[in-house]
Length: 329
Image 1 (tube, one colour):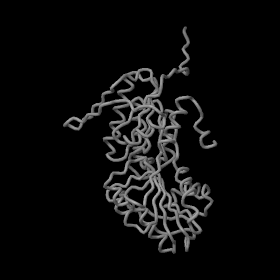
Image 2 (image 1 turned 90 degrees about the horizontal axis):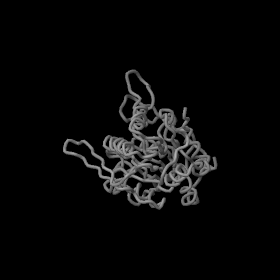
Image 3 (image 1 turned 30 degrees about the vertical axis):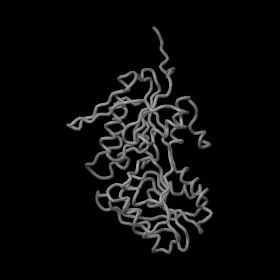
């Protein structure tokens, strides 16, 4: 019998593909790596079916498909799956789905009868399409990692936000305090507070029904006559953030800052944030912000790029080096 060691895989060079969901981010990652973005055609037929054609062969290559799954969610997700399957059928040696923002992250458990766990379904779909590995940033719930059977790098961009605040804003703040937008984010909020050497306060809110609305109830902690940094992983419609801002203001907060990784800002989220009595917003480019949304936030928002972070992780994954070393882990 011939024994084949399946662990010894030989990959060719890095090949980057970017979906239509985040072309600018794909280009920035390519620039960081000094690699071109590989050519591909994505065509949408009149019946809304998508068709992908690669411009060149990916056979034997170590391929990274960069596609965020923010709005339009279903188009971006389906395009990612089709692109992965196209690469699998073209005999790519290894395919990594680089998904800065992973959709359906909130549907992570059966918290009531007769509901799905869609985050698990999305993980299954990526595997069935042919992904060998995945990378994502700040999923809403950590247990999403357990839905994948393939290895992955689940990263956080919180250190980018922390570094920016410590370096550029901290000196001008008065007795700053971190406020976690709800108790579900308390543990991560505590990490922000520890990394910035600030005290922490929490907002307790209660959710009623299945819509996106939640009712902010009480503030646990002291914000009176202090600058406040409200932290969260993603901001969708901006409802919870608006309640949080109003609550800390009622409790005597001075300047209010917002720090979050994923600026989804669906519906009138950008307009809502723009109308709030806040000093500044710090976020990332994990989901692209359209010019229409930016006009409400211009001058009061700093968008930090996650491209160097993802680029470095791609490089290390390709070379078989530790990613934990980047964070002294």
